[in-house]
Image 1 (tube, one colour):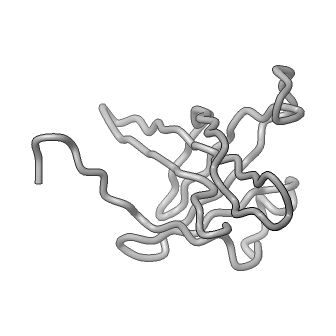
Image 2 (spheres, rainbow, N blue to C red):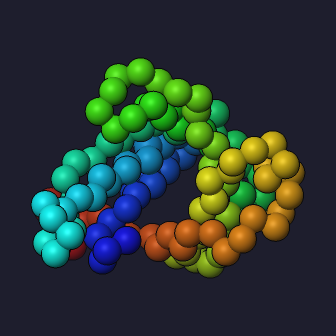
Length: 120
């Protein structure tokens, strides 16, 4: 979005368990003519992650507004592998979408390698 990150999804598999975090990047601009920038990041843990074949479903906690501490209902997501370094992500709005495979095009995610200090 706006040539800036919208979300990052970090998934880990250890000891037979899947865990991870979804990082939402909040974008804003000072006025309609100003460039967009990432103003803040909000990391949230993946809840009830479940893998079946090439599909990962999970939930994340969701606040009722960007600045309030009060939580609303969790938000459900579905991610499907589309290639060795690509996946598609959908936000599931209702139970009917969870059952239905026709969810629209999905948001394309691309694997990004993270370099660690001292490695090449």
